Image 1 (cartoon, helix red, strand yellow):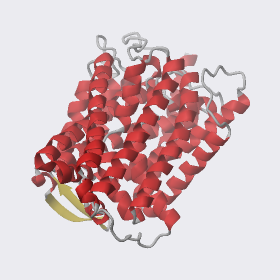
Image 2 (tube, rainbow, N blue to C red):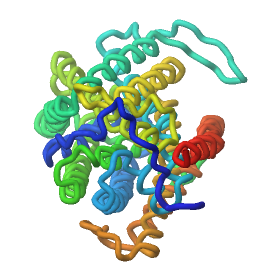
Image 3 (cartoon, rainbow, N blue to C red):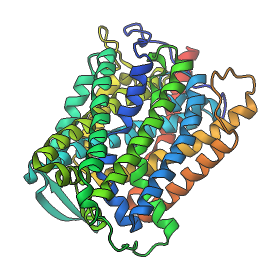
Image 4 (tube, one colour):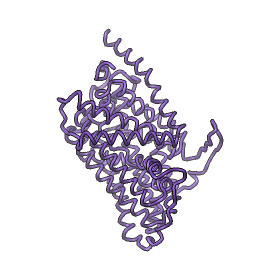
Length: 471
């Protein structure tokens, strides 16, 4: 595959040459938590309940998902500390497996990962708003396209507006972005704690109705049901891997990246388990499985309509904050690729005053706006998980290969439990993507097609960059 490092393009004379290190440990930890806690924990337990058919298996799915992402976090902590560069996995895969694999990650991230996540979070934000304004979810148009039923609601253009607004916020300052994350993340954590402790203290009188007959999953065994339930769980856990994208903007990255990832993930796992135990403590299983706003319905059961309104508003702000950090981290990937000459060159533009990657922000915002207009919350996060977890598996393989071919590489942090850590993580990622392909073959095939479409672009850009350097 040629050199193990990406092709380097000549820096532009009209743009700043570097990003600013303005994020400390607490901002970095807040980014991990804020990127991860978005819409998932407040909404997807109903999807998981329908998949597995019992409260106990829902909890098992959350624990299994947390274990898998913990293994992944250990891998990403090692790679992030060793390569604190903008672009994160784009750099790891380029170094560990070759430039094409790094490029395909960046291509997937720029067209699927971050734009789909942005669109899904915006759709989740609007879904929270539908708790207050039910008309938002009213179908405006229904029809059939390519043998598939299509429904267009007011939520989709509203989600597109939210994407545009948050992209504009990220345009102005990385320090401002870090400060916003500390504030919004505190609100997210507070919301989950209110749900958890409020449910335990005030929801006891409803607990007697929480036991209900097990509802079996249809057409699948327990293992298949758990794998299906892991898809929404992994949407809720996603974000542990994104901090490396900001490697050039974190102070003392060799220490703060691993610390922030692990501190953030342990906090998230504990909060998720607390919240889900309360869901099934307060509400009957069938109610959870049928709910469109699980957390809001739980709060309404023990705190009334006004309490549910306040918590739903806080959860909407949680989705808004997660959208903010997805854009913040995601823009650094096309920026890093363009800087290496293997992406659209306008995406390497930095604002002369704000030092933010404005070209990449505009690019991601545009793609995400289009996606927000075309899909629902569930459709978007399923496409996201399929595309992203392919590259999670490849990242585990890259770590294994780097340990073998570059044993002398300076590694400020080494993953615990190596080599089992990357091996189990890689196997779980493969199982999850294969199962999702079987469950949603059309969208998964489209996602794979978008990834493979990047190959001719890579060779075209690489050839052009090599010619420019020779001149």
